[in-house]
Length: 533
Image (cartoon, rainbow, N blue to C red; front, top):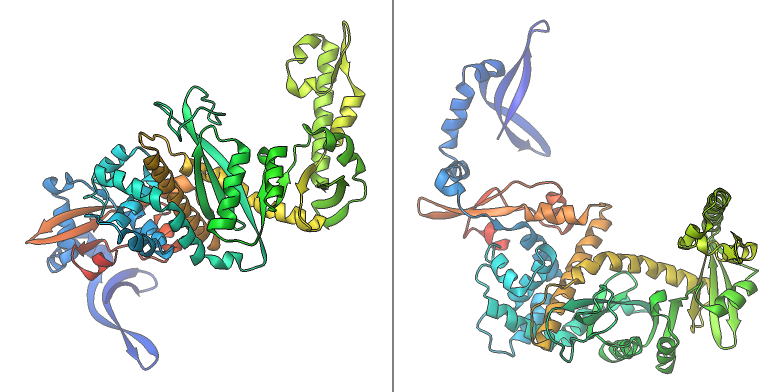
């Protein structure tokens, strides 16, 4: 049954009437039957009889009684516990088969607590409230289903994750084997680093710091992602690890742990060095890497000058293969980007000419944008036409270096497909920003990082489901909206109930994306609906 407003009265004096209506089916048709006419809506609202009627009916509604009780002072002071993220990310956790994988591995150990649930808690904390394990144990006490987790359980679980990291990665990979059903596939590799307070260890070392903290020990974290953006594996390496050693570890990972046949590694310009490429070639691993255009003399003086007959791949991509000795390059040109680069340089040169005419040339030398076009004589500074011409050869271009047999167009398209993955990885690095970490034991550090890696997989999973529905939502806002959904537990007449707070912002879309129905406003703690969540 439901309430309906029915327009009645005369055309000159229309009125709205309130009715209680019941729907019923007659054959294949759905019909309505008026159960009661309650009267004119304006009069019911004016004399308060509608409020009295609702209050009287409310005495027979268990949910309304619970909500009414929740407004009492002693109840509103109860602590609301985080609920929304638990429901949404737990569904994604289960879809990836992690409960089964972790359950099998934990069965070999004599844990007196639910290791799989603690693993989920570590990943969830990284997404919602990143912090140390000490902070995490306090945070989990305010999360539905995670209240009983203790600090020592977090430490033991970090050790468990570190000891089983490779097995977990392999099991996850095997579940997604269809990604690599073809005879060749692409993987993207990148690294990040994080620093620590404290003393050096076998893992924590001084090295080149991407955080600009050379005064702190650090670790290096490498991540391998598939062509469609799925994180496949992470490697935790000493903070002073040279790139070439990171590459050796990557080769072992791809050919050993995953037993992959022909794989093409795609990496950005930061990966390029003669040692890295030599290590890949020695291991017979194929690669496509972005080259350093301006820094590499061979590219500046030979490769770009030989590229003259471009093959059109699409409106915004033309390619030309250039081979120098045993080194194979693919020059890629975006005509529209070339026009923009030329226009930006023309505007910059016009501004530079005005500055030179106005005097003060010495001050221009400190401006890197201006300085690359300037020629300095004994007592004069002028625009150098040769430098301008040299700079023009870079307009709209990027260069790839590869040892594959793929055609120039295939090589460029493969790199561009992984560019989307690279951009996604840069956005996801905050999830892998594992600070603060206060573990003293290296094995626990590895487990802590792997917990962040599992969180990364959950984030990617939800992002993909949102994209599949065509929803472009702010990730921080969505997490905030999910976190705003809380559960308040009260006891009424000897029975325990959970009251759900209101759905805010895009919270409902988060549930819809993973195929979940948000929990009811009020439900018994031991009800089937409550248990299924």
